Image 1 (cartoon, rainbow, N blue to C red):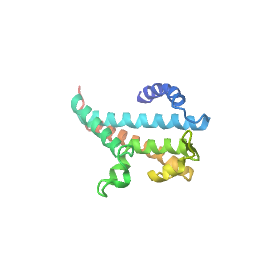
Image 2: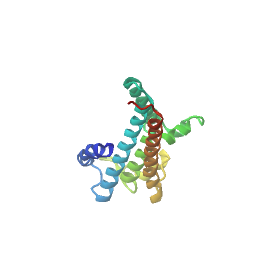
Image 3: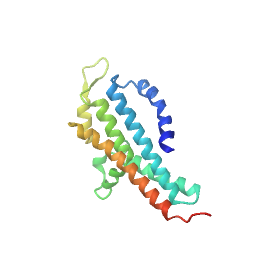
Image 4: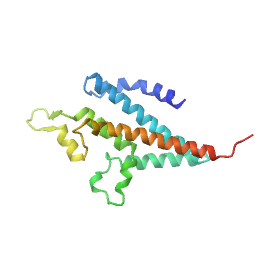
Length: 171
């Protein structure tokens, strides 16, 4: 059921892809679409897990929001991951947003050059990714992030399943 709902929700993605002015290549579009689908499924599995952990909607909502906020903060867009204390750096590997951002950066910035209007100052997408610590040289650098998102989704769905199996059944 979640798969169908997420699929329907991602039907609006073609509009956002072209409105953002991303590259007009079929392969890049479908990779964007796949990544958004997997991010949506992973986020839904986190919320499903939070719901299974609590009998109260309010508590489940708080658990899900806190997991997603920590994921956002330690995902890279808000905090430079190189400046994290070593004892906190492990959290970045649980971030849905980190893996999604890496796929989007590699998909859209690899091999691109960005120049400001009326100047000769240019920046390459490869340099930006290097500064952010994003590995981009091989195909595996891209697909390992999609795989990590898929594994996070399966991890939270498995935890949810285990929790549901251990719950008392109503008659």
